[in-house]
Image 1 (cartoon, rainbow, N blue to C red):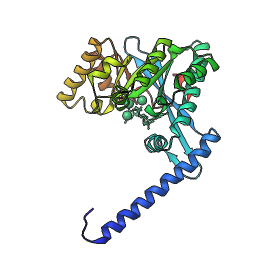
Image 2 (cartoon, helix red, strand yellow):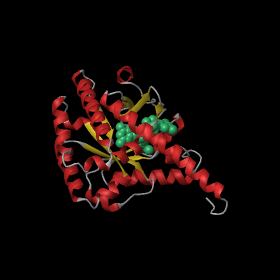
Image 3 (tube, rainbow, N blue to C red):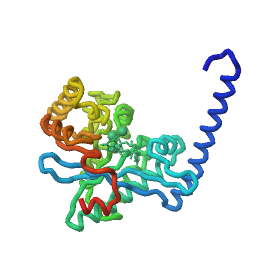
Length: 273
Ligand code: C2E
Ligand code: CA
Ligand code: CA
Ligand code: CA
């Protein structure tokens, strides 16, 4: 915004005001929604390319508010992180994931369930206890729970001993840590050494142009090789077409997730797949 011409400044503050009140509104309604457990969960399947079968699903939060309408995770999560409500969303998602994973396992369809975690949740000293108690509550084997952390999370965790310790404790239990959005700008070899990461999810921004851009193809190939050399499973996110799936198979990718396999769907739909 230019300094000359006060009009610009006024319109900026107006825009700020509108943005603020939407945020305040979301915050207020979210407290209600969490109280009434009005959030829901969609599950998106992941296919293991060596077996061709669904071996895991990612749990994604959904919120349809009676007044505000649909609030997407990209809008919801940053506000929840800022206000601290991410703890309650995390608890809700963890409960749903453990309940669902235990249910599928008992019905002869063992599948891992992935939840997305914010670093703020791991700054809570009771995180390990909370996860252990939730697994126990639903009688869910620990190896069926996966926790997705972003590169940004990993980079910050690198210098926080208490977070590294908690992650190692959970890994001891059998919980799998997955590095989400791999390649989006925070890759560090140091956290690869320090954190117990078992899988990399190549961000969808690399996959969307992979058929047209040779450079992207080389980059993705390099990421897959990197994962192999570290003994880390590599999954490609945002796979939308058969051609992308075939190319990723050829490049040696371990697993895929994306609209080509399925959109995120309710748990009952996963059973049909
Ligand atoms: P993410 O963890 O990278 O999740 C993948 C996102 O890509 C999801 O969006 C999914 O619907 C979408 N997606 C999946 N396959 C495709 C595809 O083939 N093409 C395209 N274009 N998109 C695809 P969604 O559900 O809107 O979530 C957005 C982000 O919000 C997530 O990105 C994650 O960072 C965050 N998020 C979602 N649920 C939670 C949650 O329960 N807790 C936390 N902390 N974050 C969450
Ligand atoms: Ca994720
Ligand atoms: Ca991702
Ligand atoms: Ca993402």
